[in-house]
Image (cartoon, rainbow, N blue to C red; front, top):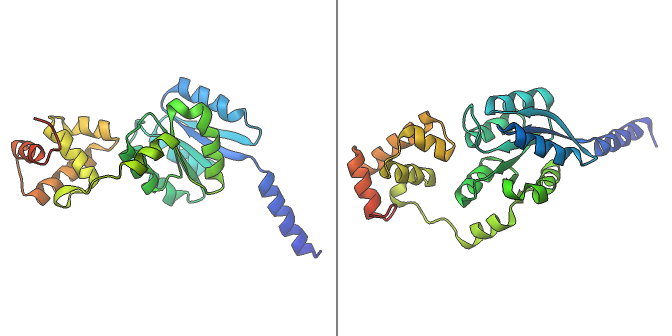
Amino acid sequence: MTGRAHTSQAAGEARATMPIRIVLADDHAVVRSGLRMLLDSEADFEVVAEASDVDGARRYVRGHHPRVLVLDLNMPGGSSLEAIPVLREEAPDTQIVVLTMQQEPAFAREALGAGALGYVLKEAADEELVEAVRRAAIGESYLNPRLGARIASEPPPGPPDDLSEREVDVLRLIALGHTNAEIAEQLYLSVRTVETHRSHIQQKLRLSTRAELVGYALERGLIAH
């Protein structure tokens, strides 16, 4: 074996034996503590940092270059969903596993579509998070099986009048009387993003008042009378 070949083989073996470095992002300290105990119990895992908001998650990913980021879907400091493609661009070698209480298929589709490799429900974290992290570390996806079955059996209906799926979500909440801030909180978006969606909805539907939007939502069956 030549010196160059031996060096290449040694480097490959070193990478194979390196621990899977993880940044853990959740805004509840008690939850982070439990998750860290779960992850640290794996001999080949190393939690290198903990973040309590979206900005912290981005900062620690840039600083520590982890193999996997475990990201809570609902944290202060911005929208986790909107941060996923930004994180993937800033740190393409870091894979993202979303950990959330949100069981709606739309959120899973959006998170995975934005670039996350894993989607784990918090209620199943003890059974699923370790596997999801291991899969993400080698570039494989993981989706909570029960949620995956729902997505497979209930394909999303086509949105009306050229509205995107997210615009339909925003329209429904507008029609139900929620403020932009409340919609942002429920959909894990920024208020500015909700305002942009609202403007696009009004332009596409050529409607200007909330009463007109409510009438449209009722006619299309987006909300009940």
